[in-house]
Length: 421
Image 1 (tube, one colour):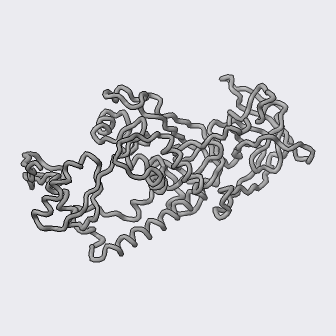
Image 2 (image 1 turned 135 degrees about the horizontal axis):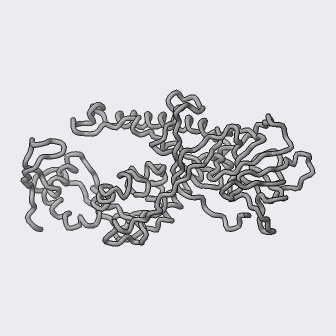
């Protein structure tokens, strides 16, 4: 074992204590003693600390204090990115990402802002297990773990990313039919939300073709198509194009006489009367063009790693879902913090044991990222922290003046190879 360096002298102000101290204990000297004082049973380190284990145990023995057991394991490396604080700091300082919580990164705060649930991270790590062999995990494995977790826990809503307006010609202007839509098809306990089927609707642009083909089952001129949970299918009678040459309006006939055949496909829709405009929808793609990122990673940043959409609309049930999600998250966080205080008997909850220690409150555990849902046939989404949703202040669902809604795509949906188009 080499001689342990216990202290170092640094003639520079500290970011927290200023000029109060000049002498600082080193990591090798501090690590084992802090673990001992805090009654740590197992000190878990990455494999580069294997050589330090000898000094860790020697110092505890030399001072005759309680000696925890140090275990080493390989760090978690994800494909196509890195977790180095030094490298991430360069990206932030050079404004190649927005901040440490930029959802294109894989820091904990970035994953939180992106909407990754804590339970999904625990599930992912549990599936991997622990090893001391260095390896790199494919991003698709991580995303599949997140997708699997959200599949069971995220409610469903109808959202249209790139809308085209549909006008149903054979109904009155004030036609309005209530429609009950389940929040989860496999979990009735999540309940239902109510939307309205009206004369004017929005559908996804990719769900319409100007020229039909036998292998296409969505909406096209003269073709019948179902609308998810709507009482009747529709048949396209005509369409018109805007100045840019794109289709901007589709006219349909509601097949409500009971004679129409069963549709071969059903598409998502949002009624135009009550649709909530989404100010921005953010899709995140790999931050780097190369895999793995090269040594000069700053020049390898993918310029199209952030894709935004500004025309999306979502059904009004979003407000009901959002208020419930925040209320549930608040209740859970209050229970967690209360339990934590009870388990730390003798520790002042106002200081958590020291004036320099951060205080965790229930409010810190609740953010916009707690509002998660699946936009059917699109992806899983969460609300970004830059949003402003007024109804969350008073708990009463509904739109408020000054609302700003920004959605982050958490992860894509698993593609079904047999899905009809």
